[in-house]
View 1 (cartoon, rainbow, N blue to C red):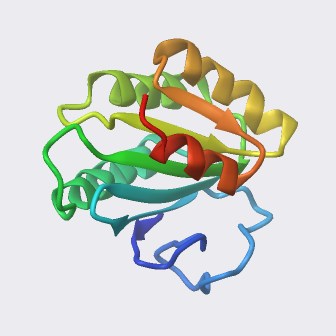
View 2: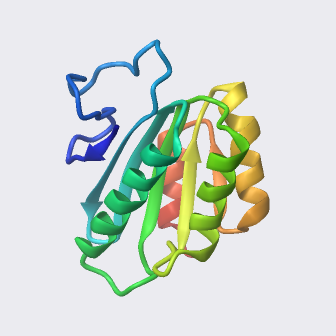
Length: 149
């Protein structure tokens, strides 16, 4: 299972994945989530998630929001979903519900992926919230996040 980590761009898990390593080939669900600026959370999602992995992500994401130095709802999220597997319907539905109904929902969410599979499911997230956008490049995503809406 993933955990709150300050590692930027690395995938974390409770076992021995090292910063900068690639996600495991066994498709176990992993994630990173960390505040990286006053109003920005960076996360990475990989593998196939179970409901317990999603619950851990939600817990860690809420902790990251509390660690920010900005008013509630003013933060943004930059999330790399390139290595995410196509999730089960129950997990994906719960993830969408969390993004739509979050108490402190982000002002904007930029998803980064160059994987055709993860982009298909990401497009369904965008349909749920107009303040979510999908990008091929992290720099382009960051520019969109930091440009006034």
